[in-house]
Image (cartoon, rainbow, N blue to C red; front, side, top):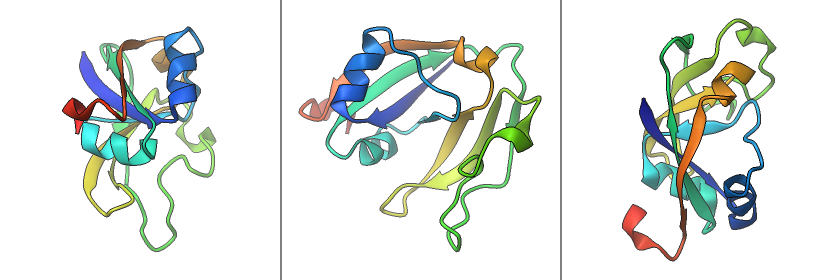
Length: 124
């Protein structure tokens, strides 16, 4: 089991906590600070993912020259993998590890623990 964070708009976070599902390609990080950067003053969704039995594969990370990360241009090249893990950086150049959901099997393992709004400074 791993605890991760997803930064998004407050509207999206509210929908997720009310039962809307994450989508394939959704990215999570172990760093609440990095996830908060992606939230743009929105919200953080804190999740747990049970990785047991999933195929989790480390891949080459973010390419600063092309400004692309693995999976940005589609997920088909990762067929047969549940989650890809790669080194990434946020909008301020701070490095963090990203977990990108590739399969429905992995999506089914994502459990929301909590939602933190931008006013809640404890997660920064």
